[in-house]
Image 1 (spheres, rainbow, N blue to C red):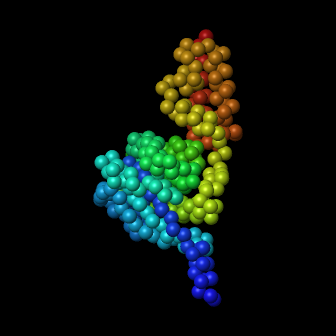
Image 2: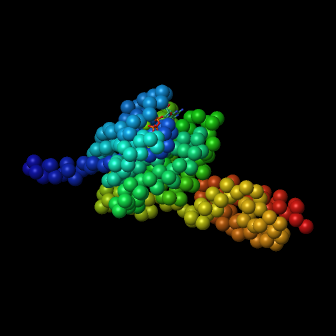
Image 3: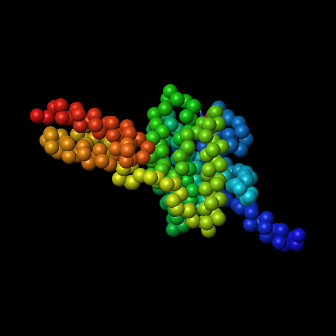
Length: 273
Ligand code: GTP
Ligand code: MG
């Protein structure tokens, strides 16, 4: 075959992408990458200093993908070093530790930092995000459950995986799905194909479940003022029941939220004449 034709074919098939890892210090970003690339786990904590850089080659369908991985340091001290590296990423691995609530709560601020650093280039729509709920092997210390993590991820159109760099659980699945979505996006002219994740639930449902989870008492849960009448409680209950009924709502955590609303109504009505 003509060597130029052959070269053109090879070029079409090979792809170069940039991915970054984000999340608080010590959540396991480097270990997840090491588990995938080197098939091993390092129990000792070696904080990433600024940035670690590595390259790996993967095969997605008929394409060879050269992946440049920029593994960020999570510690605030390294902000000045890592802020240079957000630009031109096609994929982001967002990691939190299921045993540390603050690392889950910090995901929003990682997105904010990224947006800020990308400035005018900030088109977050055309980046593939994957969320790793990491350290699931440490079941006893778990404080963020699957439905809460899934809800956060899927309501933003991000993929969600339960992972353990220690046991390897979820790691290959996560990377395979991540690289395949990035390849789909590149083949679609750099635009994230829609819908990337077919969530099947509304923002109102997701927000309501989050609000119910963080409500301080039964009044608050039903969204009525303390001392509300029987009628007001029933009206609020009916609205929430329609929104969250497990037959109608597939959002992660909807079943528990629905049960909590039923219990809240029962306990309030007991004390209202
Ligand atoms: P920075 O580089 O400081 O941002 O931290 P990091 O997010 O890269 O964390 P790293 O991968 O260095 O892991 C932190 C600690 O958590 C290490 O002691 C790891 O051995 C441990 N660790 C990482 N992943 C897991 C996991 O899935 N399970 C368990 N049990 N420990 C883990
Ligand atoms: Mg690290």
